Length: 381
Ligand code: SF4
Image (tube, rainbow, N blue to C red; front, top):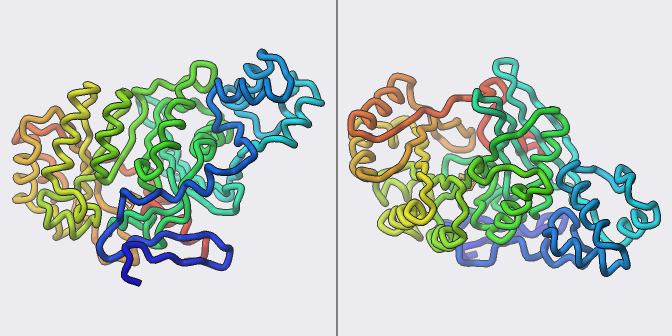
């Protein structure tokens, strides 16, 4: 098939979008339409206003909608039975006329080194996704997935090896945080949308998620404590800028030239650095939020002192931060992690040129594997 997406229909009938040789086609419809067109309302994905309309349409009073919202997002209920201050007849009606999306933890791995937990969650349709819970000095952080798989095709990433099955609903993104909070019994203070999937390839559901997770009557998380990571979909970065939400934007940069970036990330065939970097500058100008540039160090590919110098030149004068990531080896690709000394030298060089840089702390080294690997091994791949 010569189209940019090879469409495969697996035995379970789900459509899978594969990244093609020429790279992804980000303007194409994201594979979320099929999930957003369900007739039965997905309660946890509704805004407060929409929930109110729905509750009123069932002949109930306004205050019932507030109670229900609290069960969904503050108390993070797993079933209608738990909602004990709602009349039984109303709960029965809700069960008939709507659905309550809840994720089941199929596997939880805990690091013996630092307590990091990796969760494999089963979605209502049987698909599985990964999420990670990490403890830092500044609070607990959860990394969530935004899609089942990914169609962006980054060469160093295991999440994209089978393409994208579908985008996640807002409720499924929220539920990763809610279930982790319940299972660990701990507070969650930061969220990074950096797991499987390209969040901007699921744009509308991402925006809905951001509004719901920061709802005062819900989980009430500060929007400043959220990071959205993108491989560089320029139109969506520009659109997101106009939302003017003070979240941290993290751009997966990984290379200092278009040529090298194209080797690692097919999206670079679509958008050049001369397009993506100004889009990030505009984001900073509008929101005042410093952009984080993610740079995965791959041994012998992009980790030389010359590359560090080029990176410093590329980012010169920007109010930014570089996050250096020792790449996780992916057995299906031939990428090796840079030596520790090489990573340190790279960081020191950036700092010498005045670029603020940190090396991402490796969390859960003993349970880690690359993002997407746990799901693949669970599925027997
Ligand atoms: S790194 Fe992110 S955008 Fe790239 S393929 Fe993996 S999940 Fe998708």
